Image (cartoon, rainbow, N blue to C red):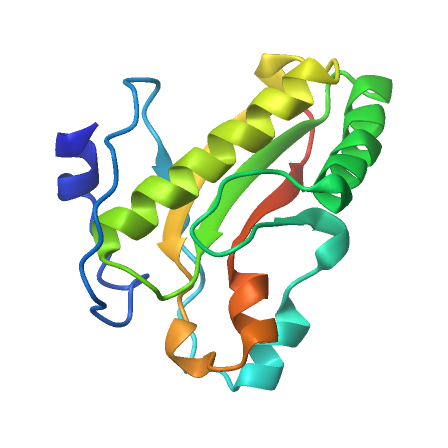
Length: 164
């Protein structure tokens, strides 16, 4: 996993260096895809906030991968949708705010994806319907200074893809 994280070209995703924080290494598991957002100019804070669809985003507290009641309710809704269409697949894309180092950000985003995936499986969603992707820090994290914007960056997006 360490080689995978080091080998990833994250320069386009991670805009700023932040203070160093330690993170426990995650247990070995399948390779993690990285999210490659389209190249775009730096967005304003209002544009960053407007771009997050909260109906498809599980939000987290700072430095946390714990699900609150709102997240659990949202995941129940998506689980029902996925169970109703077993051929439907989703990509679970993990993000974090700009607090901490790149390694810490990636590890936390990965942990959040793991938690969301586990909860969806507990709710009856087949593992084959889910894929993982980790971006770490939000691409335009330097635009966010307000707490609302930072809160929206700490998320796992549920991205529906066409069934095969």
